[in-house]
Length: 514
Image (spheres, helix red, strand yellow):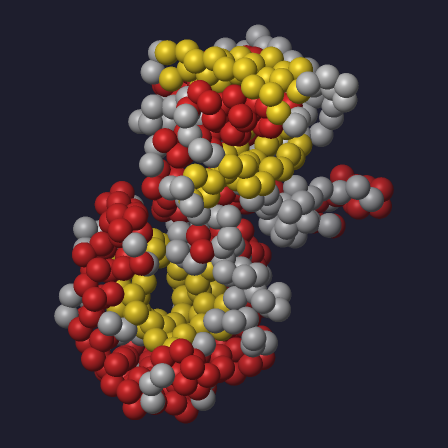
């Protein structure tokens, strides 16, 4: 065997495994406008499992009965990765967390307590000794219920380092298996975070027996950089979210961390268990669920991430893609056209293409997508993978009775009354209403409210083109409120009025589904 090949194999064998702790369903869902209902959380959890994350933080079980149910349900469906619930350093929180995750194949309780002087004085109103005692007592209590315990020192990056080391030592002695070092307010820099990890490795008793985790926020735009600096310094777990969603400016982006480590494995001397070909699908699923679009310039998954407009760039890529592309689009699962689908294509061809793209639908769901595919094919010259993706992400669920748009007629103009006649069906019954409004959509939404007899308010509305061209699909996103809760609805069509009505009906279905 050549010496170079021997060296390569040796490097592969010594490469560190970095665990991916995904908190999209907990920290990510706290992002304004990103709340999800239970079926959506289950869909997302299954996709995260397929993506290959090591840990899913499913929620904060004690925070509400709905959150408890979500954590418990996710724990019951996830087959491969660990399922964690967050808990404060109190027995009540720990009991709720354990009750929610104990059905999981690999349960974890994630206990946290603030350790910075500002948090201890103004939020906790506890002394250092009280904090140390609480960590020792409550981590030990959690350990008596669950073998896998993570302890987080909230606001660790602004804590006194010597005191922080004492806190982590107390957690290890009480049974913690993971020590998480959060940059809770996104205040730190890469140099400071890597220095902190090295300090803790040298000063925390027993730290060599546990995983060192980091959880960085993006308030100064450094979450990914700080996280990767910690990986270089010896962290073995990273906490992140899909598309970087989360409180305030968000969290470290899962897809950016995973592809940094994969693309620069030589630099980080590390690897993850992420199936990178599932990244794009996961990102799009979350965007579809939350209604938050992915910025075109977003690294890894943005529409422009693998696009080239400059003539010089185009010439270079045509000659050798490596001139301007350090990753292949297929590495992250961005689909490529391999076969033209049109109005003469059959259901089997559609199913095969969707399966190739990673979407496996039931027969009922495929019927729903196929009907809308045929309607779209009558309107468009060619159907792109982006069109199919939009259809696949907006299929009708088998298990929830839903309202469906049957037809609509809208009259609008600057010198006539704006009216809408809407016909929708549910459980085999059709309903029709006519309404006036200040505009065509206002009239249509009022007609739907009359049919459903729901007091619903429109909070926000946006419209995006799924593909380029005059026959592009328009994706509408609405935020509607009912009884103090906000719901997101999405709809697609080449007719922007129709896509808007579909989005509103989709939001109504989420309300009626509970």
